[in-house]
Image (tube, rainbow, N blue to C red; front, top):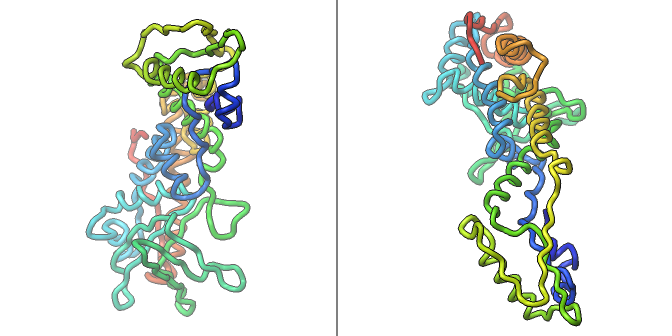
Length: 346
């Protein structure tokens, strides 16, 4: 709810002071989630519990499925990609960025033409460089004020950058994050949480309007400023809960409120949470969301999560690795997904 004083007057304080109505309201609504990286990733993962849990569920489950490479050196590279990370840690980041940004990147570090290490790269710092025909010919990575350029070796087909992306029907070079189609639901769910927090923080603020019934029907500018300062200092915040409101002559308090039917607050928030979960391919039942009758029980929902979301994502990554690593380890390289352990859950 925007500040009613400003809305009534368009920001003109003089016209406010001449009005017969002085309204009290909470702070402004939180702004909607921007659609640009990295703010989108922070808004989705850092500020929304449903999106955060969905990303973690998908990334951690998919990363638990290791890869089996037909080449020993390739297998060692996938299991121990660098001195700081295990294979599961590296791929958890890859799958996480894939859900948040629609794109994930790896850098292959080589020595004398031999692959040595793999490192994750942040998608918000990467830019695809296309050639004259529109195909990606290189990449630029910006970090700490410097720009690194990666190029594909056209002769050997070797590329130092691995780019895994989700399908995007309107972009040739970048994938589409689930945060995009779930954006409105994410906005609603996050805004409702901020709104609930604001209600708690301002629980003592009188929800209504002060109507001036003086002789001329107007407050002077000084009277209006003094009244506003007194109300803000003495009747806002949890410390002022229950404090009575003392009205001077000519002032009358008119309570105002929205009915539960008008807000339908809880139901709208639950539906937004379900929509976010479905965009990420996570059954709402796994998140503890009530009202889901699609799956008979948790076991079936968990099985559907693995077979419809996690395993297809891991197989997609394995096929992409085959194509990317084949010029380095031989055209007959095969990369398979390790089978899931019996009884493994999300």
